[in-house]
Image (cartoon, rainbow, N blue to C red; front, side, top):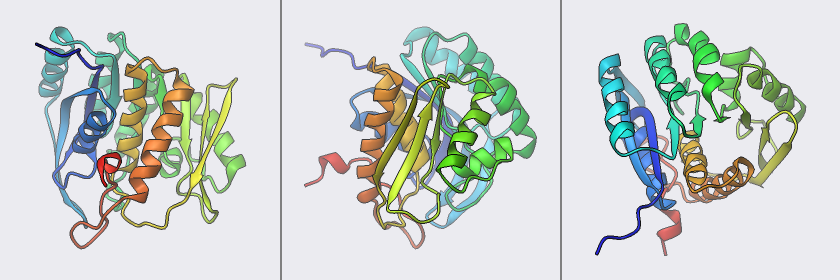
Length: 267
């Protein structure tokens, strides 16, 4: 006897051989949150707890074929994008998303947790003009805000300015992730669509093992949207899940370890 089908979420992102970020983090998050995760691999990386040793992006035809194989047969109820590597892949994926009737969460991945570049400088304009306009929710961190807008955010007032600058590129909602703000006892994020404004606060955990935080948050938001949640509720639930995953982050190798995607299942 077959069971009920869970909501369907597709990640379009790069592979992290260390398992902490990228499609590996996305699929773990989706499983933990009760949805069926599917993937379109855009690039293969050789990386571990110390950083990224190599990146090989896939051809546009390979990305397009993976996407069409999933969407045309299985369907999707939400899509999350992560590492897209080049302008050509950004534009390919943006075109596919524009023809897909599902909410889209765009994580405009620019650099890894270790500071390694994951997006070509030449691709930034394509992110601004092609990808962000098709986003239901865009989820930049403060470094990505600077890449996209030139703004350097140092306080909560700056987060508000950053949200408006990113929203001007076309996403319906913008979630500015303030985890990199200096000091403070709280990790604060700002979600806005230009009329509503939601400040999300959580305790800041003293844990250096935070690899995969951005991928995990965006995938959690997409999972909530696939379940039918409205954007503010999906983001609040995602923030709660990620906060727990950061608190439970563990050492792996000799560098920065990952958040724990399965923290809710541990004793």
